[in-house]
Length: 244
Length: 279
Image 1 (cartoon, rainbow over the protein chains, first blue to last red):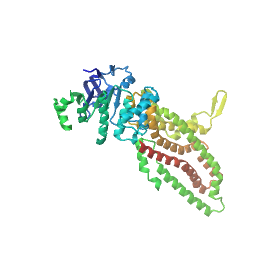
Image 2: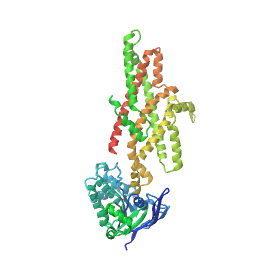
Image 3: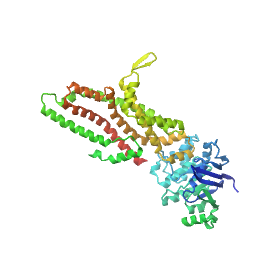
Image 4: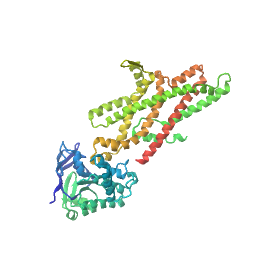
């Protein structure tokens, strides 16, 4: 068993009267890829938002590299240096170029040297195959290109854990591939990743463990080989028969 | 007629942004009607009555005085806008503050001044502010127009606050989430990510507000400031209160405002279009 990087233990999250996460536990080891799948409204996005403290939760524990997220005295900046997040809607800063989007956080948040950060930003954009687009504004880029800038922007903070929240859900089918290639490349390089996704084929290829959530609980989890061929829970079976 | 066409569009956008209502196109109609009246009556008067001085001669004679009055209207509008914008920016930021007491206080102040009739605020300021101002051993006379500036800057402040709040809240939540997860502090998020985007969206309604404010400076004439409307009245008396001069002189004042404000309205529309495409 590899060293655990993310440990979620009995997490509960309530929005008013509605409990959207009802006791979720999962562990992701260093360098592993966990895919969370499940019907809409099952609390997947909320779950990963709890991991980087975008959403506060009432009960349970989330530990990233030993940092307890559910601590009132949590140093959020410290946590967020370790956790990168990519969103469904890219959320690039539209008033800044691709390069500036990548450079902003390391300079402003980590207070790093500008020249150094700039060199890294060029390298990162090259890595996500956006060479030549450094000075384009987000509005001038396609969805797939914007999403790859967003990935580069997260990577610029040198995180230990990357969270992907349905990052291909808003993309045209033909650009989904280029984003998935980038994520696969990251996974192969040993980046620890948690993906909320509807791309079953992709989950099957890259995941070490697949989690199926429904109505705020993890119904079933297994390595992809057995998860997709021999689901045990009837809810998983029903879901998979619909999407596969 | 071309100017009337964008009416539904302008209204729609204004409803969307919950802006102070300004029906630009209606003002165009009224102004154009005023223009028409002016020249009909003017030619009429010039043709029928040879004994009295011609309308155009009267207008030409009083133009320097009326322009001086109009300059005071512009001065009042510029100063109230500057003060109102400065205060309103702070108030607007307080409206979106995470600090609850601050937010509620700001909300109360905003609502109070946004819903107060401008004329009542003007009267209030004229009577509440002292005639003299003592600073140490110096004694200043506070001119009436400076009280009008203060009176008008209060509703401007409240409206600017709403524009700031609306502009900030029009930025998608994803921008906050993305910058927060990159480790930006709230202060950095606001100043580096949100406000640079929001300011562009605030600009058109802010310019709209300025146009409304400029027309409203004529309220100052009611509280005794020697603005262009007060002077127009005095010109009329000086010319022996000739009824045939009434429409030309006030029409002349309308045209002054129109010439000053129309480019602003036009630029506002241009900006609205530009940023609509851009965002």
